[in-house]
Length: 147
Image (cartoon, rainbow, N blue to C red; front, side, top):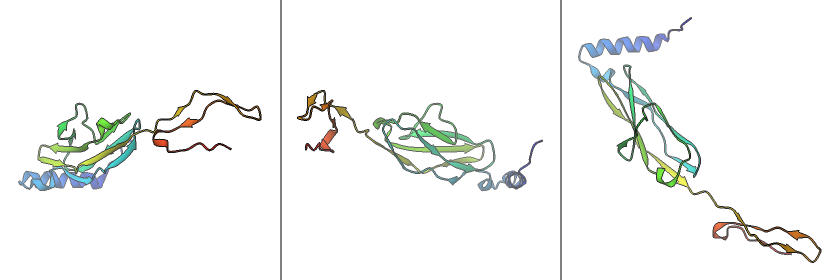
């Protein structure tokens, strides 16, 4: 059994009627929810979403720094394994037969992943305890304290 969304159906019929009279402002795509700037760690997955209204069908084209992204033609755009090269501005062009709308630019910031390394030294304390190495972090974020 199909459920009919009557408010959407009425809006669509009104928009089609007004468009037939030359009032295409009601039929052209309009952005109803913008995408936002995001910050993620390197290697993370990030998604940008935009919501639009207007007479269907709506066509979406995602852009990265002003250039079309091949195959990115949906209301949601996802980047898996984000890297520093992905840290730019993204926006979406939405169109139908009555016009075009552009979302605002959403900037992606990709924070570098902290590298964790272990020293390969082994030591034996005065009490006979075996030490297998100590973690070290770039920039000496953490200092090891010896008793």
